[in-house]
Length: 310
Image (cartoon, rainbow, N blue to C red; front, side):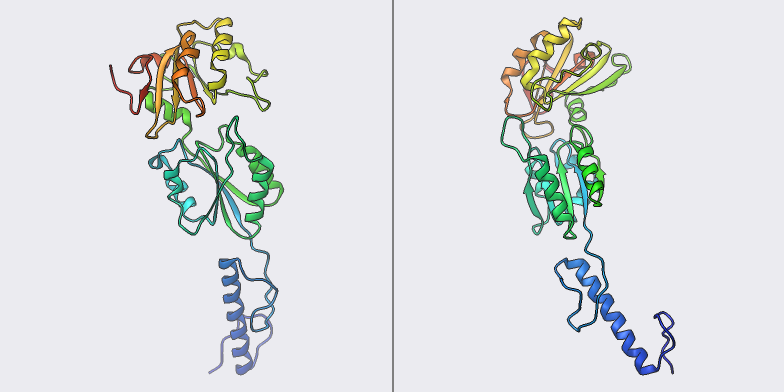
């Protein structure tokens, strides 16, 4: 009986020589698989001295949206990415409950960026993603909300692409959607909002962005949500009123959405600066402006947890 070696390169071999080549072939494949899984092997030869022709280990980066904070609002794909990660680089706003979903062997690295506080520079975050991915690790860049909405996903994806690192985005529930759920409203109610805008509440250099079309934002037929708008809430209201937005325009304010310490409030545009005084200003606030917030339950008083009729 002759060994079938048609799957091996080269000419037909004798039985003994063929068996040796089969052993080498299987040993090499097993060693390469082991190196790929562990990422710890080094050198170009196996322990038996056989040459291993392999490419450097290739890791990947997944930008995962963790939503507003409640783990039950994670997508299934996000949970799978967290559970299969080797390293997780997480933002400061990612909740502890979500971080607990990571297996015990996963390396957790906080790369939080918080307004007015000492933060990790974007260049440092990029360098961490690159260094871990180049060792063959599965890196999760865990972001609050949705990575593609004020989450710097574009900058990070462009960087990884330039460096030749495989990357993908797993979307998450953005805070504006969680805010609508907390107030029990539709951001695009067909009788009250003909458009929807998400606007940043501060510029790269601090202060309000000066390159925004503020006249368009003052459109009373739109729903506008300012992300991280708390520090400049009074200035936002003043600008919009000067541009013709009625002082009585309904406003929603929210912090820590979907979490146990969630806070929401309702007021009018002219009352906005005073209304946010009851909020913890160290937490990022969402400001929702538009007719849809007139439908919310409650009054202008702060409400904690789920909104309840009064």
